[in-house]
Image 1 (tube, rainbow, N blue to C red):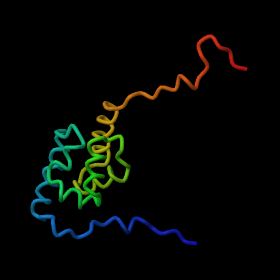
Image 2: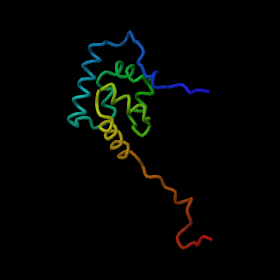
Image 3: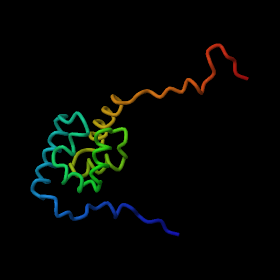
Length: 122
């Protein structure tokens, strides 16, 4: 059985709530801000024009807020699509997301799974 090629399905749907001129201006602003390293947090992205950015990314409002306010929850697809719609290098968007995610991350403690100090393992 041949698998579906999902590359053809990454198209934004028409949304009557989106003002095309406002979206174009917001995307141009984001591109410029990425280029000058002015974007410090991923939550600044939907802040430019939340209705248009949400539709351009194909995300629901709650999903957009949840992921972009906590970049640890972003998917690779979110990062790639953000770069696509802002016409920004993938690595630039990824760098912002990683920097913020690492800053907000608490290191995982697995000490309860490991042998205690001085214990020998066979």
